[in-house]
Length: 145
Image (cartoon, rainbow, N blue to C red):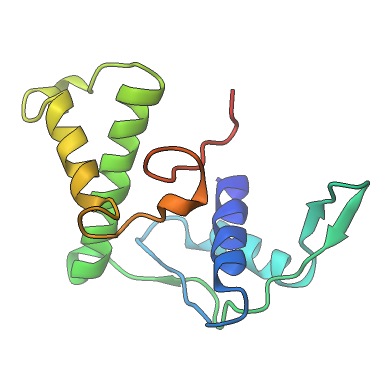
C-alpha cells in the first residue's frame, strides 16, 4: 500500500506541474499509514534518475495531510470507489485474463465492464487520464510483469 500511495501522490504532483495544489481525501480505514507516507515524501522523495542514482524530488503541492471521510457521507468518494472498482475489474479481466469474481459475475458481465470503461474514457466523459500511458485507458500498471 505504501508504494501504491507514493506512486499515486507522485503522479498527481507531476501532473499538477506546479499549476495547482491538491488535497487527498480517502475513505475510512487506513489513514494513519497513509498520513505517515505522505508526510515522509513531502520532505524526502527519492526518485531513480535515468542517468545514475536517485534525486530528491519532495512533494510541494499537497496542501494538507491526507483527510479521511466516510464514503456513506460523500457522493464524491462513492463515485471514486465506483471508478476504481471498474478499473480494477477491467485490469483483472483484460490484463490478467481472469474471470469476474463470482458474486460480481452474477450481476454484470465482461462486456458491461468494457462499456463502463468506454463511458469513462476521453471519448465519453473524460474521467480517465488516457495520456498517462500507452494503455487504451491510460492505466499505469506496476509492476509491469
